[in-house]
Length: 360
Ligand SMILES: Nc1ncnc2c1ncn2[C@@H]1O[C@H](COP(=O)(O)OP(=O)(O)OP(=O)(O)O)[C@@H](O)[C@H]1O
Image (cartoon, protein in one colour):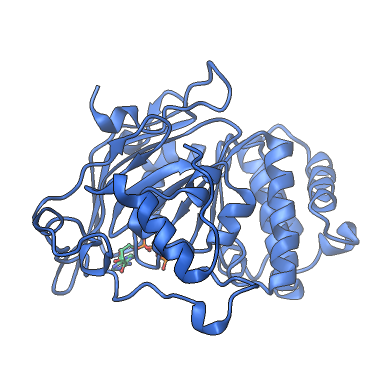
């Protein structure tokens, strides 16, 4: 068993195998001027009923790594290598488009950032949710489908659902559209829901409501949820476990609480330190210095080293790509992870906060 195989082998309930198991996945995108190494050899699992957060700055490979699993990558042509990606006894990477279509929307549902682009603007919301139900179950009557759709709209808190059933997407507010999108995702009792920046386009107050609906969808369906976001606040609120991505790789993986209390990678710490805090003075806010690297030619060694406090000119960070090291209940890809307690204490004292007790 190599280290990638052992990562995240912590089922929430003993005896449950992973719902989805991704091994050694890489994705390259051909663009003018080169090849973007968008995802670089990532391995992870999600377990039934779990909310797995994938977090990282823009461009770190969160969306591509998940969209590649379902062949949802638009142009440019993507080269997806590695695997297997096991779901329900199938390797998703080897399925035909037809076979994947049967899985998408029924066993795996997606919720995107902007439901306006996911809903068809010329069909009513009710029609579209009903269609999703009927596509996967032809025997169900129109009457029953309509009743089920109205029940779903009621569940996600869309008021006057019978009236709303007949309305078009543009007649819904952003928050209501996202509720309807969640209703559509729940329609076929999926095993897995992928939510890609589900609240980014919404006002803060509406965001909180939509998150509650997402949690409700999880409880109602029992599905595992992959929550893709750059918002650590959202992760803190919802996720059971977290993958932190940087430059196409997983740099840290842990349960949410230990990740927040004792990060084991300097990038995670930098993300946490850059979170706006209610009690912080403006001049206490820290932003991560520098920019993420170009994924056309990622830097040698650790991709984070040009922005990292821990590097301190050390040769190893410049030349040797760190493996994701299994630390038992979590994993990190930093040569000097065992210096993280000190690093966290230093940053905490700069920010005027107290470092948390160790919670590995
Ligand atoms: N259609 C595309 N054409 C060219 N490059 C792309 C395309 N889609 C993604 N990329 C590149 O692939 C890399 C990973 O992108 P990805 O969208 O997965 O990042 P992300 O972490 O989800 O960021 P965001 O939060 O901004 O969506 C980035 O370098 C991005 O520029």
